[in-house]
Image (tube, rainbow, N blue to C red; front, side, top):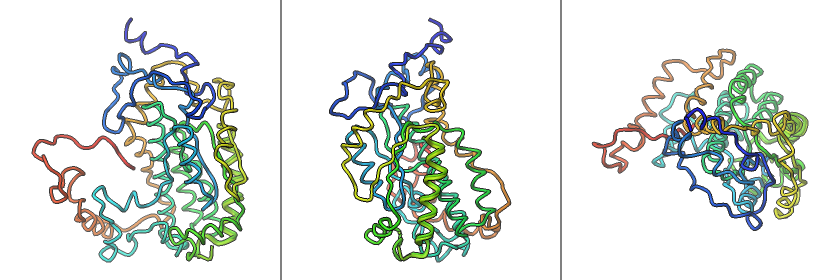
Length: 414
């Protein structure tokens, strides 16, 4: 058989990631398949995919992407972790700015703030909750989108390289909910929202949409109660999560996000903010996402039994869709070579996908800094512990064998 013939093999539907229903690990049929591929450290060349390693050889009924959504402090992490455990899937938590500010050697770059130019000091979730109208909020939100975009690329790379499903907390499409709510409450300017939306337009079409979205519906009053209890990232003492903000966030979820893809006395998480957040969830995100994925909504004011959710998931028929349906269309791939191309894109070309975010838009002045400040920031940043050289090449941090190291790490975090 020629290489061309090998590349054009048709994948039987039984081996497709979009076929059959998801099942709990207690009921799953044991399948003899290759060991998970180490995609973070090993490349997946085309010739290898054609001759030795079929992407679909690791697929089973649980080779799926499940996204757990919900308001702030709705219990997503505990729910997603338990759901992943019961379905024998990989759990991936939501992103945060620690990914940026804590380097591979454990040094917290926020310690350098006294030496940094004012506009380039660190700005994370705690800063946002305390000062939601700060100049750096727009850049913070752009970074959060970048991190979610990068995390979702990892999700797809993991699913296609190992065959194991992933339960992910929030996804890049969720960003619209937060961006719209922040703009409404004037945490960011309209120009900043435009810039962030342009970043999404340039990148979201590169991703395969999830199979299933689960939304945990929690009223704003309960969200505020949960925020006070956990006080994560200074939510309770911040100014961002007002009641109005949370309500708008919920509204954006339900009217924008869900249809497309089918924390309390603080300054940021005010009642108005939380209400708007809820509104945006329900009127923008949920209706939008349900056009492309299965959507399940649960009243989670009082957390229920995850086992019940698993039973509901097992009743879903993912095999009812074909390439002519908008829902699951990204996963209706018939030829082995196309699965291999998708796998190589997410596992090996992440750096290129991240580069699509490098759009020089000048519309939002608050997202730009002066050259002198940037130069000063680079000098301080690159002299930090573990930042002087590439990861694995810092002798001061205990790295050894430097004389014989010839290549850098394959994995690109963001």
